[in-house]
Image (cartoon, rainbow, N blue to C red; front, side):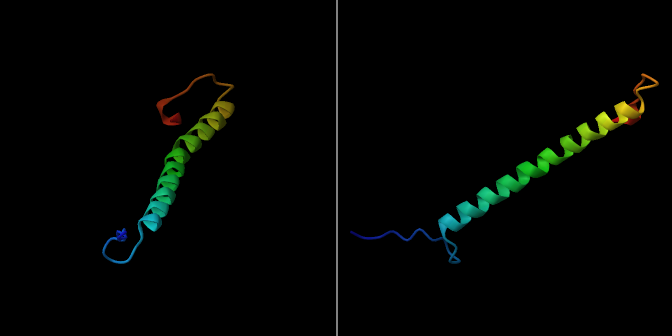
Length: 61
């Protein structure tokens, strides 16, 4: 039985590319989760600071 070469030109194996793609996906997902988390923390912090006034402005967000 003849073996099929699964390596693309350049010598990088498919499994190495799959592994790299998985890590890039995870890093991108973490990066996308950081901004909403920071925004939520900031919102809670500002709510505590402005609790006495009871108002929110557009500058709070």
